[in-house]
Length: 355
Image 1 (spheres, rainbow, N blue to C red):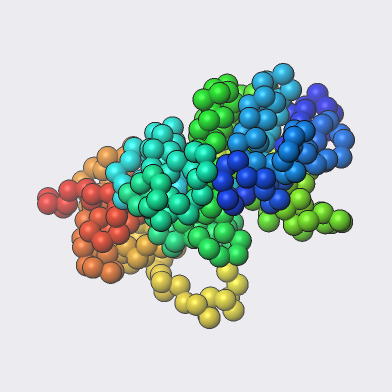
Image 2 (cartoon, helix red, strand yellow):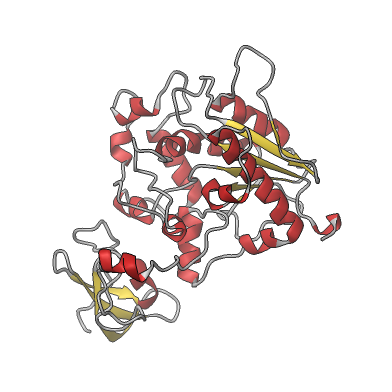
């Protein structure tokens, strides 16, 4: 593929770190970039007393670099948003900018001398008012099969601290550079010529490239930058930008965020694994609207009604929670992700009085 068909002249891969404070020099915070066809190279922090990047310094560098003179795509290894259950529990509008503002008001992890754990423990901010459960995962995390929840702290491979420390800097970058395209919140297909910021999960690609002498953190940043470069060159990147199907998944992805390269539906587990851990759905029919179907949140379809739902061309279905027995109405398009309004922090059910 020729250079004229490429969307980006530069790619940047960032392996993020939620350790310590925004001013701390972090060995785990690494940046690699490619220019044109050049090999990915590590980008050191600006000259000064800090040996490694700081979160504050990295944000300032991105603001300076992403001025749209060089079309750039940036992949960052932390989540950009939270699961829908978080929005439902805290009664937040399903809007990313509103989420950013609300999160930063409760989790001021970009303030000087502030550790993520300071907010978790109640010493700073009001994080207790905006918590989630470690079992909550976004659809895109389920799509990868291995990505951990944004609320799963203190385990190997966790992105919880990176996410909780990184989100305020996304807001700062968006405010400083409003012309940037934050994917997929600003639509699934970026505007041609715009610089784009995406959520990356290096595990999807790290095995493709030999590590050589790089540390694990360096390698993660390297593979993000290199994969973006090669995918842009081959044309695969435009396919990676495509919205997942069906439409309700794509709509959820524009609230929860989406990992570039994740595909829906998730890959099925092997039969051997299914025998070890039986599915909650048992012998339920494959179609989500059929009576007897049980979704991943243990909500069972009882029957279809003739009542009109509040989503386009949808009828109301009666669901029953297998945990508490609550019966309620839901759009057919929502069944696959519905949560109980009584015990699962789900949205209020649709009326079924005349069903």
